[in-house]
Structure formats: structure tokens, C-alpha cells
Image (cartoon, rainbow over all chains, first blue to last red; front, side, top):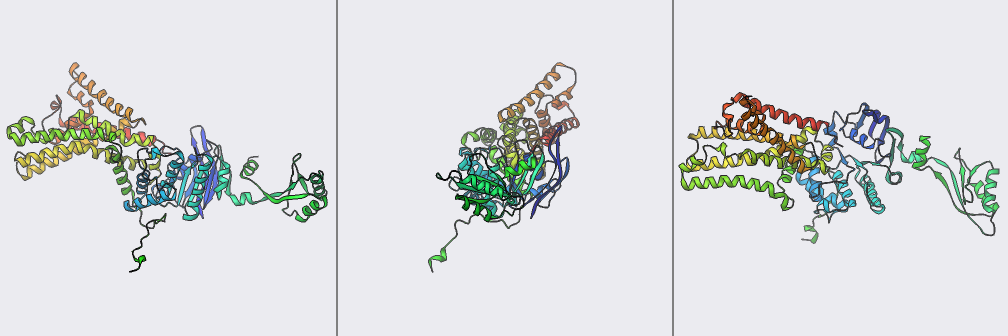
Length: 309
Length: 291
């Protein structure tokens, strides 16, 4: 299902081009909008919400045109801002309820939904506490709660793990994944951390200085094997066993890369047809001990580096 | 009856919303109500309630004391105290103090705590957001303009000192309502226009007060010390608005020297300031980044 389609999108601020002729499509699930600070992530979100008119190009979000049908679109989508500043004196439940009402949920329904959603994000017991007394992690959860309370079809979360320690970050990411999987809410998160995007996203859009680096479904992008990785266990009384395996594989015509003294052999596989029996025989003949053998997949970092180069 | 007959599901958990979403009217209403709660410190600590409630209390207390005197001592006291209900509308300085208090609270806080960005991600637009804020601020100011005046009108009517006949009573009531609404809208636009340049509430309040002083003092000096003419008084926005209300109510001028200015010029001065304030507000927000 296509959620966002972008074609030739350009956003110019004076001499600075925040987005430069960007084309991509975002599909259902969790999408990571990745890029360094100033890459154009927040600018893209503001255009997608219909808050900024692009200089050139077209964008459709949930089959609506953000500028022309902005109010209608914003009743179907939600946004969680990057900043951690929220109304300090307001109890979390009032804050979530109020924004649900503004997004079109009737008052009574908004009240129950606010409580339910705060329970969902793990703040059930804390829901009557003023937001100002909450930790950064709890505030991030409140931001997520307000974003999903009105049952949107699509949520934009701007740096939802900003300022969190690794443990709290994992919890928030798990929560985002859970919201998407269990309640069918599509989510686009912006982040400058590749590992957190890899951890929970189905799709990625990578921007660099306003230009599109790569976009697509993460499975397809990382799923292509780039060869086989063979890890061997060093044996004290056969110190040459690993070298023998390497030599044998090379003699069989395979391209083998190995860092000095490493126990890992990386076999380049252009055809995806590396016969595993070749590896098995080489290991057996050398009397080596095998620890693992697996297809090597590209990481998000590999993809970005490849595309950039 | 089995034990399960009385069973209820207490935790319904998160679920999809299948009902009809309410439109922009509901978003404006909810935002206006939330703003009004914030202005009067409802649901917040006592210190947030103090100033708005104190001003509100003082304006009503003055009327209650006057009404008590009227009820105790009769017509002569009533005539000595005031001649009509418009004069029960709080003095300009109280008005501007109240506007300088509530207008920044309504919009400046949103800039500082990120609510403006969040509002802009909802069906609200900049125009509807400002409409919601204006409803709230004007409504709050109406409490100190229309409230005391209406109370005084009702008190005098009960005492038998009100306007003669039903027709005249309703005419007085209608004129008073229109004048108070117009004055409240004006103070709202003026207060919002001069408090939208900063994201610090105290500074915004000071800017509103300085805008008032910066127009009222020069207008008085120029009128007294030069021969420019009486219309120079129209550069004082608050007293012009006050005088405009008096003209609507057919009340004598409360502000010195304004009686000499024609109603046409008073109306032009009023609408000029109202338009200028509204344009400042709209233009500032039009340029403001939502996210």
C-alpha cells in the first residue's frame, strides 16, 4: 500500500536547497527517514503535513494533496515533534485528551482513549502527573501517546529517541514497532541513527544534504547476499588450518577476502551460487574447525556507502 | 444469576476509532476552552489563578459595592455614583492590564512549550488557531467588560432605577452588549498583536503595556502642548475604543476631551486600530514556521 508518493520534490530557502528534486514512495509499516542534521528530514515532514508549500514537485500523502487538502489530511495523520518541550503544568492525560479532541475525537471518547493510550505506552499509573515532572523517556512516551490517541492512519515522529539512554531508546523503539504491528498505524520516524532504523523499520528513505541517497523496502535493500562469511575456530596444534582453507577456496576459483590473522573468510559471491560443498570439503581437508557459515547481508551503512560512492 | 452476569470489561485497551470525526468547529472549541482554562489557571497551581481571578474579583466587587449602596440608599446614591451601565465597564487601565495578562498567556505559552507545532499538525490552520485563541481571549475580557455592566443594569432594574419600559431596557441591553463585544474584540486583537513577537510571557505583557503607554502618553502631550487638533487623541487606541463603546451606548464621554471628536472620527480611529492590530497578528503568524 502506497502511503506517500513524492515526485521531483524541491524546497528552496533563499540560497539553501533543503530538498533537491527528490523522488520516492513510502509503503506501509514503519519507515525510517534517515539523514544527518540538516539533511531535510524535518522539512520533508512539514511538507508532508501540508505546513509548507514545496518550491517544485508533487507529494501525495494517503492519496491526498497536503497543501490543498491539508485540514482533511491532518485529521488522518499525527505528528510527534522533535523537541522535548511540552506543557509542563498539564497532566499527561489532559494533554493527550485535548489533542485527541482537536484531532476530531468526541470529548467522552477522547477521555477514555487518553487513558487507554497512556496505559499502552506504559504511563498508566503516571497519567495524572504533570508532564513537567516526568523524565525525558516518559515525555517521549507522552509524545507517542498524543500522536496515536486519535487513531491516525499515519504518524510522523521526529527523532522519537532523542535524548534517551540506550535502554529507554530500545523500549521506545519496541513500542513504536508494537503500535505499527498490532494496531495497523503506519509510522514514519526521522532519525540520524542507522542502527535504530535498521532495528525497527520496514522501509527507509535516506537523505543527504537534501538529496535522496536511497529509498525502498529494507528487506529488499539488505536482503541481497553479498557473499558468504565463514568463521573458523583456531586450533593450537594445526596453526595453518585456516590458511589451508583459504588457499583451497582460492584454488577452486573463489574470491576470498581475509583480514590479517582474522578467523573470518569473506567469500565474494557475484553469482549467488557459491557451492557450500566446496567450503565443506576445504574445511574437512584442512582439518579445520568450523564455527559458522552464513550469507553475508548488506547493512544499511553498506547500502548508503555504496549508493554514495 | 451467575457471577459472570455482572462482569464488566474494565480495561478496554487501545482500539481503533470507528466513529465520525468532528470537524474544525470542534477543534476550535476545544482549543478555545483549553486556552480559557489556562488563562484563569484552572487545573493549575494556585499562583496561576491569582492575577486573573484578582482582577476579575475587583471589577465585580466594585459593582457589588455600588449596587449595595444603591439598594441601601436609593436613587440619589445611584445618580451620584453613575448614570448608566457603560460606566460600570472597568476603567481603561484595568482593561489593558487584563489584556496584557491574558493575551500573552493564550499565545506566547504555545510558542514556548511546543504546543503551536502540535496544533499545526492537527486540522487547525494558522487562521483557525488564531480564531480559537481570539474566542478565548475576547471571551475572557468580556467577563470584565460585559459582566459587571450587566450586573449593574440588572441591579438597577430590580431596584426600579433601570431604563424606562421594556423597549428601552432591551435597547440599553443590546447597545451595552454590542459595545462590550466590540471593546473585548478590540482589546483581544491589540493584546495578541503586541504579544506575538516574543516567546517570553512577561516580556509580552510588558510590550502590550508599553504599546499602550507609547500611544496614550504622546497623544495626551501632543493634544495639550500643540495645536494639532483634537483628532490627535485618536492615536490612543484604548481610550478611542472606550469612547467608541460610549458612543454605541449613548453614554457621555468618560475620557477627557474625547467628547469634542465626532463619532465618525471615533469610529474611523477605532476600526483603524482594530485593523492594524489584526493585520500585525495575521502577518506575524503567516510568517511563523509551524514546524
